[in-house]
Image 1 (cartoon, rainbow, N blue to C red):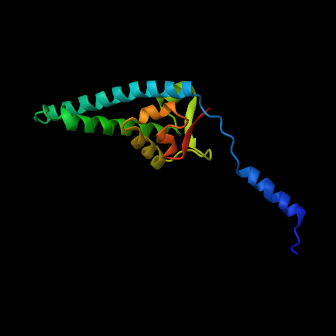
Image 2 (cartoon, helix red, strand yellow):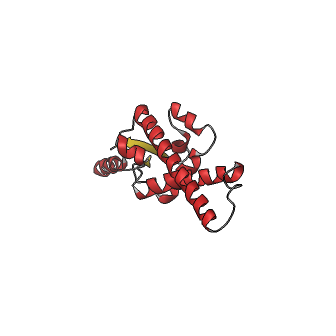
Image 3 (cartoon, one colour):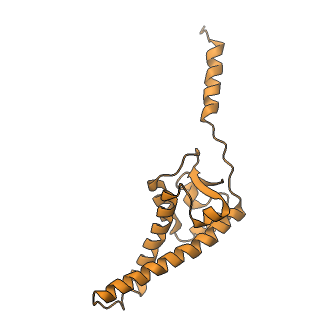
Length: 153
């Protein structure tokens, strides 16, 4: 028969409580607001990048006709889109312009701040076709695939 020290058992229970984090999740309305605001800002950012590329090509004496059509344009747009989300969330502790306005931020499911790597993965997930529609469910794909969530400040 094994002897158990009751006081050590109680300490173990209390240690488990220290690891628990209570997160206050953002509402679907806040998340939708984040989506709309960030989509507008990301498109404006992408537009500025496209204009800057066109100006640079023009200054270098090149022809920019083929750059702003088809695949090159889509690649430039997606790169700038991923760049916007990654830099904003990584440098602002999980916050984008939309999250700043709605008072929310992204964290890991354990409540820790997200890293540059996590912000980059979240951004890549956002360009998956139909990913935006996953926001109508319980957990958007960019959260479930990266073990993150958006919480209220």
